[in-house]
Amino acid sequence: MPDRPSITAEHDVVRARPRVLFVCVKNGGKSQMAEALMRHVAGDGVDAASAGTRAGTAVNTLSADSLLELGIDIRGNTPRQLTADLVDASDLVVVLGQDAEVDPGRGTPVERWETDEPSERGIEGIERMRLVRDDILDRVAALNERLTPSGPNGP
Image (cartoon, rainbow, N blue to C red):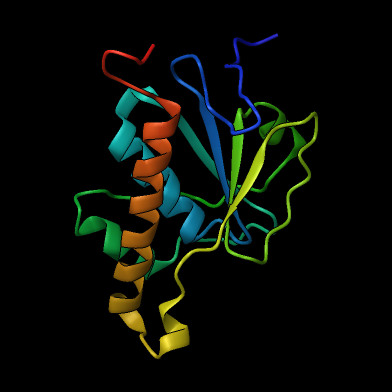
């Protein structure tokens, strides 16, 4: 059995390097952004991956462009299909948006992030993607703090 952290009902991890799987439908936009942002924020502190429930064929260009503004390059990434093995190998699954559904498999905790959707306010293009990126970045930073507590009371 792989070394997995123990997660309470609140999903607090008590060991270093938890495995987080970010999921959306196509794995071309939001989940790719979340994976890359977690790697950027957490470094080696969190093992991040992403997948799609109906994986597409390419990363969304505007998603990639918005991350390039932060020095993060996902243009060479390829969407990955979600599998039960990916879920089971994770310590936490984060579903981005309302459309993707994930079976928790062997009891892997699943939480859903209702991410900002600027298009509902008439905001489109790269400005829309920057707002989505910034919303995901804030959520990823908070998740990183929760998963990898530091300081005098941390592990």
